[in-house]
Length: 365
Image (cartoon, one colour):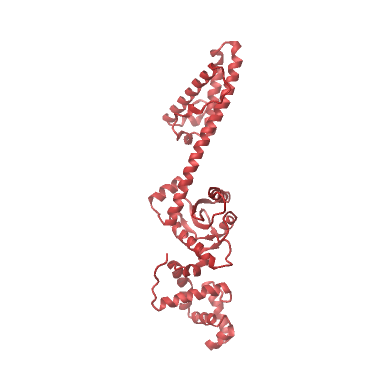
C-alpha cells in the first residue's frame, strides 16, 4: 500500500495502523469464508466495525476501494503459496467474489457515514439559520459557520417565503442545491410555515432570489438587504421577516420583492427601523432641500395629485410645480405621479411630521 499509493504514506501513523488492522481482518474473514466452502451469502461489513467513524472522512471511498484492490491483488499473488495447483482456480474465483462483496460492504459503510453526516449538517445548518434570525452573532455561530465552510463567505442576504407543500426537507434541499448550481452558497431552514434561505456570495440578491422563487410556496418572497458577511446577516433577516409579515398589504407587490420596497407597510406594523429609514431617506432630504420640495409634494398629495389645484394652492405656476416634482424624483428616487411612490411619500411625510411634533415612537422591532 505504501509503495503503490503516495497518499497512504501521508496518513498519520494511527490511520495507517487502522487500515492495516482492517486489511488483516478482511483477509482473516476471507480465509474463514473460504474454509466454510465459499457460501452464497453477502460478506458482512463487520470487518469495518472496529474502525473509528472519522476514518471515513480521512480516507475517501475511492481510496478505500484502491486499498481493497491492492489487498486483493496481494492475496491473488499469494495463491500459489496457499493451495495446490488443482485448487488454485477455485480460490482465485472465491477471491474475486469476496472482493466484490467487500467493495459493496465498503460502499454501504460510506453511504451510512454520508447519511449521518448529512443529518448532522442539516441540523447544524438549521441552528446557524435560527441563530442569524435571533441575531446571535457570537463565537458559537462562528464555530458552526466554519464547520459548514461559511467563515469566508461574503455578500450575504436573507430570503423569506412560504414553504411549499410536501416534505420540507426536500424543499430546503432543492433551494440549497439550485443556489449552488448558480454559483451561490445557501443555508436553509424551516421556521414554522416559512422557508428561510441565507444566500452567500451574491452581488444582486434580488436577481438571485428571482431564480429561486419557483421553489418557494405561494405568496410573497421577500429579500433582505445585502450585508458584508454572515455575522451581519441578522439585520437582513429582520428586514426580510418583517417584510414577509407586511407584504400582504401590497396586493401587487412583485415576487420577489426587496424588503426596503416594503418600508411603508413595515412602518404600519410598528417597525421602528422602517420608520426611521423612511424619515431619513425621504422626509429629511425633502425638508432640507432649498426648493421647498416638502411643501410642494405635500400639497400635491393633499390635492389628489392634481397639478393645477396644487399650483393654485401654492400660488405657483404649474411649470414650477412640475419642476419641483421632478426634483423630488431626483432627490429621493420617488416619482409623485406614480401611485405606489405617492403612497410611500405619504407615509414618509406623515411619519416625519409626527417626529417634528415630538411624537415618540414606541415598540417596533
